Image (cartoon, rainbow, N blue to C red):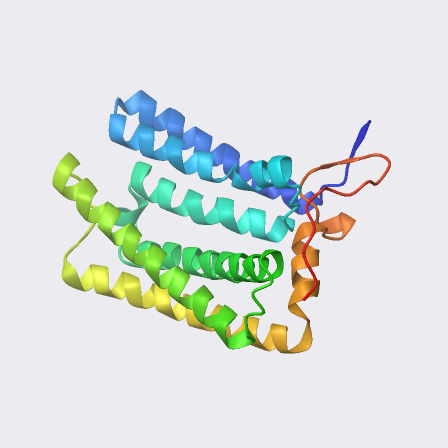
Length: 224
């Protein structure tokens, strides 16, 4: 038997996911194959938290799940609804800022999980640096995607070299802000405790269905 332990905030995440699906429908109605496939791929990324929970027992805090959905929605709506053009250049920069914040938090999580699972004993500085470079790398991959889409499908996702460089700088700013905050947080909270919060968040933060007997998932962080 299951009971729902999801925070009300998770319903906001579900709503944002539904907006992404709405954009998929709009893309289909427009007969735009590229936008349809891109929107479907984007929606599939929002399912990663659920997949992690199902396969690894990782119950992510709802705040991160919402950030992932919001970051993806901003880019999907920017393409499908042409918000990038309607509110240029501010909309694009806001989307990049939100995405960079989300990616940096994910970068912190990846580094901390790797540290705990493989007993790497990473110093705090290495975790922070990984999170920053992870975000900057993903920002570069995104710009490559936009360039490829423009060249192959005749899109207008990039507005010149200056637009691309400003996007990357915004990514860097978002990464550095979260890195500073994350570094301060890790000075106060042991990384083992951070990993435990991601694996077994408090009931009000959980984003999934839990067993009624309160049993925990099989995935556990290793203690250094």
